[in-house]
Length: 223
Length: 361
Image (cartoon, rainbow over all chains, first blue to last red; front, side, top):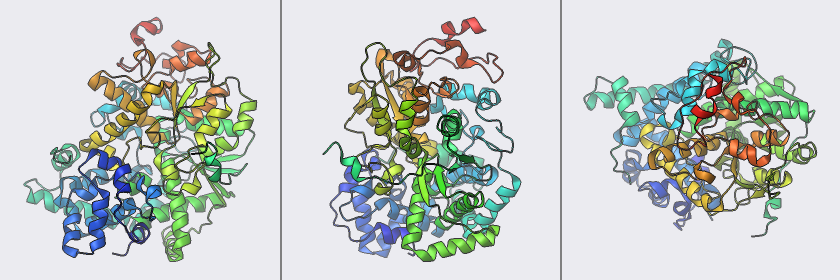
């Protein structure tokens, strides 16, 4: 696997478990970064393939709390990033419940980047998808021009300021960057592997129903 | 652990002439903070800062939720650096902790693997015809406020002191994981001895609360919040921090990262609605401030001009403690001074808005 994050993230782990002790994902899920690193270190292709198809690699929150605490200078979070990249390139991510969620992230954050130039915009944070955003956020969305307009002269318009519209020329540059660096191909791989899996699971492809299900379904078997 | 341990983790912070990169999360949830930062720098401190309409998201949320590949984000970041150089600047300051972590990581990656910098240069040129120069100085916007904290103290209209008792306000600070956990030497005080916010709090008269889960993540966890099915992870980790800080009775929380501000605010609402639990005094939530809002209040900015009406947890109890004069009924006015209605009440809020604001209807 040629990924600098693997080179930087894993030298020689002595399995002390400090990463697991400080890991917010380990506190919440049945997840143990020490064990994940141990499997990668074996270089056992079969075991690594099983890892790439499992929920295990999708629990990490990439907070990188493991990085400054490791006495050997390893970064399990970097290793997770490398494994997740490989799992999506090979199409293995669709074999696990948590892995299949990559489609939901691509269709929300990913599509938003290409459409607006930002990872998120107010209208994308819909109360039905984000009930935890509360009553004040709903009030803000209901009065968006009145409220955002107090802090930006360019809300939804071109020019400097918060939540300005990113110009078509700039978006074109971003699209070209995605095309040339493999970002577009990566998005397409997430879509096509998801579509294949969705059909296998009895959906009419990776449609709105499949998106909704991967976005909301929790089997509660992760703890 | 020595109280001065933070001094081992220092960094150079440019004094003037900044290229400003906005944050996806901060401009959505705290646009008043970004406006205040620019005003504080240019009007209160007389520094030069450039708000460039040409930059985009760094795509960092996509990178850390693993849909944006490394070569792609490297090239998007290179484009930001290209814009900085084109505008005639060398000091890059980012309004976002996720972005700051990414800029730091990529500059280090290019140092360690020069072939990746070369590939990025080629990709950027091929995609956009641009070339780029790396910044001479990289700082998070809180670093910049930290750098100017003494000058801000000299201009202070209010201090972080209880105006009624004269006691310092008790402040929980949260620097956010990606500020210093990725490259501890890039943050004031590193990840173990957080001082970027603590330095502001102490300079402006407050007292920092040291509590057991001070360094624990706020719970964002990228995909663990972005996907609805995973949000238990996010709220559980915020819950862990709130439970840990609550016995110390903080007057407010101040955060470095816009995501952390939003989560610690919104998850208090959710916990209160789900379980009836509130963590602040008098049955309310603990107000959560950005450092721009904290600096703005110290400098005498109006709380609603700072955008504090956009918080779920009411900030009025804190304003009262600080002895700040403000117009309570102006909280829900639109851009032309017209009443626009108010949000529905929630358990975490300090008072029934229906009563307080009926007069404006």
